[in-house]
Image (tube, one colour):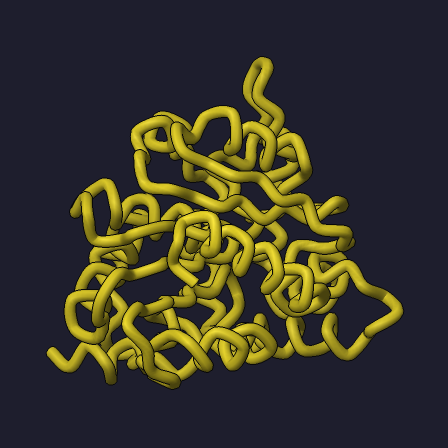
Length: 268
């Protein structure tokens, strides 16, 4: 299997360490275009598309494998072993933060640190845990996706992006959602929004930076605070940003947070 073809792996920059950027649901690696060049000046920067997204190989999609986040985590480990040089820092947005965590737990020592942007281990409220949605909310979301995916994408993408003063970003996210095969997107949505990785969070010993938007429809501040409390070795940075994609709408603040984190690790 050609891993680089399967996941449309792209490499830029050079350096003694590697940074791997993984996009979230409905997106592709183009979402890192404001941040990746900043780090390519000092690191070997790797971007890729999750199978079923972007320019990944559609023939590689397997319903059974990708019915759980572990299937994507297995791919991450294969990519890392294939392309990484030196210490590896994994930057995951949204669901890919959990994918990177699962990869680390499966193969401890693979990553020197994680950067989780808008992570959520569970989207559904449960007792004292605030995930941001009720089970009825998620069921309704999935039902809408099933019956009218393109309509859902058109209405939800701008709300997820959260910067009405920059409508081009909401339009870009809408277009990204609409480029994804609807059947794959529906399955990935179910895998994402019904996942519950809270028991895994406390097991991750690797240093982790959680970047949390001050206003986020998908992963509210309470979730970022939960991650910080539960992760054994974490740093929380709340950036002044409305929306779930600060790497697009607040890339400068996001890069600054990562730079500060890496300096504290002695890795910059």
